[in-house]
Every structure is written in C-alpha cells, then in structure tokens.
Length: 385
Image (tube, rainbow, N blue to C red; front, side, top):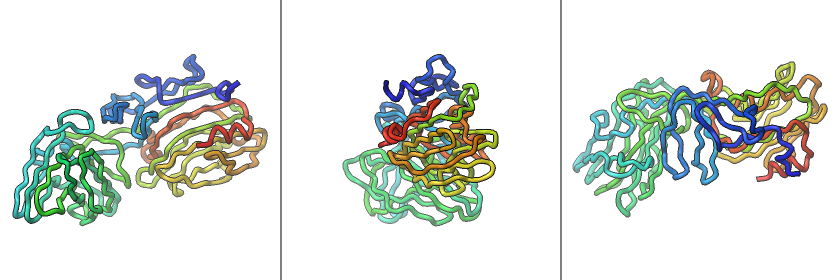
C-alpha cells in the first residue's frame, strides 16, 4: 500500500473548470474545492506565456517551471494606465541633447502577441519614458514593474525610478531576453510617477511592455489596463466537504510563500478547528510566521522565508500534535481534547477573501489530508524535499 492509498483528500493543480478545482481523491466530487475570484486575472501558461484567465477559474501557473502550481493572490489594483500602450500620450517621452522614438506593436511581448513597443534612443544627455502623474497615499510602500528586453544582441543599462520620491533602482542590465524589473519605494506626498531612464550616452534599442504600479512591497501577476485603473480580486478556495471533527488526522501541503500585501493579516492554509477555534495559519503580522494557536493561547510559531519551497505536515494522535517541515520534526505539542480537531479539509486556502485580513499569496503545489495519524517516518518521507 502506498502512502496515497491512505489519503482522504488529494488536491493538486491539475483538473479544473470555472468555479471548481477537482480533487484527485476522492473522485466523487465531495473533495472538490470551490474557486471564487470575481475578476479576470493573468497566469503563466505551460508555454511560458502570460495569458488572461476568466472569472472564477483557478490559475494553474507555470512560473516555477514545468510542474504547475495553483497561484493564490490577494486583491491588487494597477494604478498605471495604458499598461501596454507606451505610444499613448499618457506616457511622456523626453530626450535632452538627443532623440527618442516609440514604435507600437514592434515585437512579441511575454504574452506571445505582437504588442510590445519599441523604445529607440540616441542621446548625448538624458532620455526617459515616464507615466503621467499617479495618485497615491503618502508614506506608503508601492511597487512599480515593467517587462523589458533588448532588441539587439547588445545589453543596455537603465534605471526605474519614482519621479516624485526620487527613489531609484539599482542599475538594470537589459538583455535580449524578456525580464520583469521592479522597484519598491515609499511614496512622497500624494503623487508618483513610473520612469524608465537610460544611463548610457549613445544609442539603445529596447522593447517595453506591461507597466504596473500597485500598493504593496512586491509585484504581483500582471494586471493589464487601458483607460482606467483595474483591480484584480483575490483568489479564494473553499472546501465543500462535510465537517468531520476527527481527533486523529494528518495534513500535508507543498507550497511556496510570497510576501503578503501591506504587512497585514494572515492566510489560513489548513484549518484545524475544534470547539475553541484552534487553527494553523500563516501570520503576516508576525514576520510571516507559521502559527499554531487556539482561542486561549498560541502553542508555537516558526518563521517562514519568502520565495522558498516548503513541504509541511501536521499530524494529531490523541493529545499529541506534531509539526514536520522539509523532512524534519520541528516541534511536538500537547493539546486538549477539544483542540485541533480536523473539522474540514483545507476549509480556507485564502489569498484575500476579506481584503482587510487575507492578503498573503503563494503557489500551492499539493494538498493532502489523511483521516488518520501517519507514522513519524511517513511524515518525514512525505515532507523531504
């Protein structure tokens, strides 16, 4: 018997349809997860291209390679207009002592479509392309991003900067391969500006696409805009299984965590609820720690690192709750009878259902629940990277 033969629920980023992510086990529909996201969103498909996904369709994403992950993000808004139209008057072009020209739809963008614009500069002074002013909140973190590549075999040096706070990125080396460059900065006043400037005297020939300015300390998936700002709603996944209230169980998850939005709230990735509402969650208010807590007290915390792959397993056997991470037993807790019972399987894998609380995002590769306590050896083997 394999370990999967013991599983009561297996969820992977594979079979899906609108509003539904199918479970591998069970196959009768009782383990399927509902998917809610009231807006379109983008993902990286199996060909490595950015494409739009319609409302309520789960985002099976290939950002991390050939093995897909379920992309779960909180709500974000792209405050920059004309994100793929740099020839529009919204984008100011300037060259001092030289020339600058913009050719629309010059090359294929990271979407595979001929919609990336060419920026050709021949200058002896300073040259840049910059957005019109964007309304922001004072003294808050924002992140700007843009996809850029060289149109020649040469590399060029540019900088991203906010035209009002004066914050400048490190030097960006633009190569013939598409790259997404980002800059996080604290706003100064109520206005910001996305500015891409050349640092070299002479000619440069690049393509640009997909400009974005969003509230938060990291860049999320692309949110295309035209004449107005666009908000992408959060991805929310909920199990539809009947509450079980099991004393003995095991929960396994393979995931990659990305920093949360604005440093607030938490994402519950496996709810383990008893009469006193005990739970296991990622607490972004506490430096992205994985927290094991009940209503009455916190049993333990362990910090998780950003952009790191984790395999974790929690198992309860009687009054003992054990936590395994990446092949190692991390901690053992003694719990009360009414604490940490498995009421539902992954009842909230939530990237932002309540935008005042849930704003963490990440890539979920696999979720497995067992209605029995695995052995320690099985937990170690299951979580070994």
